Length: 70
Image (tube, rainbow, N blue to C red; front, top):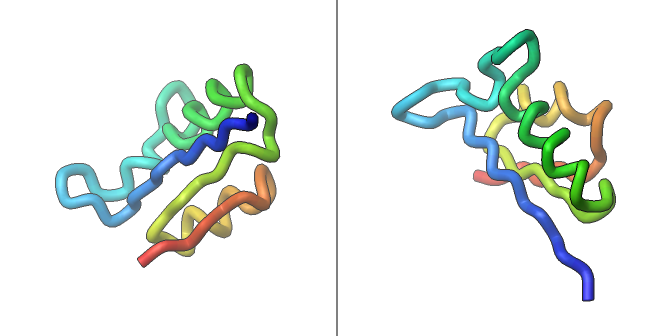
């Protein structure tokens, strides 16, 4: 049995707009999260779901497992 990891990345959040792309120590928060998960799970089983084409374009180089949501 395999595990699928889904990382939600809502760019249009009301409380903190653009949160997934906010830099922390020089890296976007979403990239930090992705790299932490990558330590424990296979890349093919990690998915990013987002409501933003901006995030999709930026992370397309890192992973093809991006799901654009409404």
